[in-house]
Length: 293
Image (tube, rainbow, N blue to C red; front, side, top):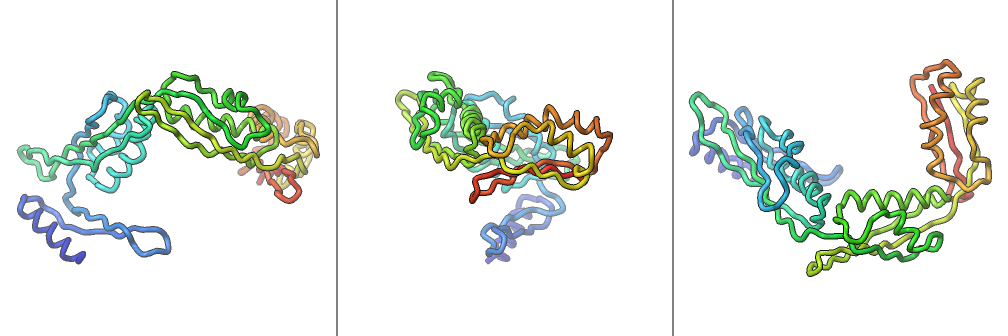
């Protein structure tokens, strides 16, 4: 069957006077049988000359970064599909078109110019944008540590503003950061968008799983850091004591504000250095390990 498809495509190339040999690759999940067969033209693959996104209101300049991935590159339907599903859809979602979808990418073989040996194509992505949604409000379920009003404040979205997907995702990160700063490092919130197409608004219902509260465990110092004055300086600067409520944001703050000063004071530049939180779900403690090589 596959060879028959190769022969049919090769015949099509000959009919259109396009030089090249048809081949294919098999792809699929690791350890499983191939599920996708991607055909291509070797030796003389079509080159993308231009790209256009049609069917929606957004300006073409917003897609310039995606276009650069294609222009003057061999055309690949697989890559075109992936870009439409990820990059182009994300651009629309980030402008409030939360249910935007793209049709199959279209191609047009452009007229050959004098002396041209490689076929050139125009690549077209057609979007079905759907409504542009505004933010209505958030609803919270399963929360006990923080009130609904507090969680909405952490989310940071205001009723009436454009419901941009990246703003919503950033707000969710703010909610989880607030939980992490009070020891709830395993907190999760699963969003369920509820669309009102008539009003063009969206309400997000968040199902919160707070988990258990963690406390600070041991401060572990290994590798080059074990030697003085590194170990002493790290211990002196580190403010979380064993038994304190673990603040997941503190390690980032420590690395940003104290790390460089300790390095300069020790006059050592290790090849590799880092800090790793090590949560223990049995003891509900978080050890923090500093290591350098």
